[in-house]
View 1 (cartoon, rainbow, N blue to C red):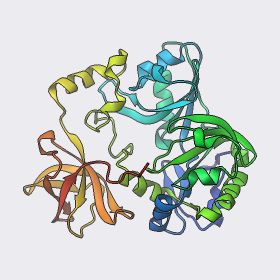
View 2 (cartoon, helix red, strand yellow):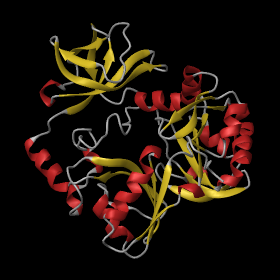
View 3 (cartoon, rainbow, N blue to C red):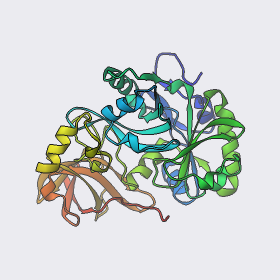
Length: 369
């Protein structure tokens, strides 16, 4: 079974393996997960320069099938699902009527009447209930999270490592496309997606094969320096890449336009939940804007700190940390649009002491392609 039914946090099928490998376990989104093994900085740098292996089986999977599947997804998500081809994936958001996200997600199209959504672990039950509530179309909606272990191999050596354990033509697999594939002798779904800012792949397969696939991937990756990586590095990597995290940059009160995600809100596709609010904001402007900033002194910003402009509170930090690869403190936060221009000098209130910083262009890090 992929999860424990005991009272307390859920556990992935690899829980014992993580503990045996010295993983420091924490509760995250209702799951007991490894935050780090050898250390967040070491794991972060491995992904940027070589490769890291993540257990992301806590993520949720929701299947939408039937002749009305497309109509349902066009109504509840912001992106244009009709643009997808078989084997293609799409970053999108499940929408509230107020133009904000129930969750961000990846939509995979298997066929005209068959889709799989990968959603955030903490939101799986909420997302499933929301889709079911708005399923006036009669599509088949199923929470199939227990049917999958999900492992992510991320980093510049990811493709070379996977080539040793699969006969699939991964070199021909484009970014945000997926294929049925056998890896380490196990059949599953291999997607060229990820949340680190690096090239990488996510493999979905039956939980009963989890330990075998995990160990074989690590063995195959030894020549390239592949190491296990935890949620700590996953967070610092996504922040360097400027990716939003639900509950930080995204929530029920923040619209997609405010979060710089207007590119996944296809207003021209026709009506969908939240479209009218987004249209009004596009015409009249937003209340706030997500910006990236870097510290110009030695201070390290943290989530929840205030952003100051000319000594006055102008907004708040939604994500902040020291970026190991960039060797500087960076953060994301919201300020009024009039104060959001690149180059603006700001301060971060670090426990009562203003520390200097400046707004910079996102992403902080972008890999060479």
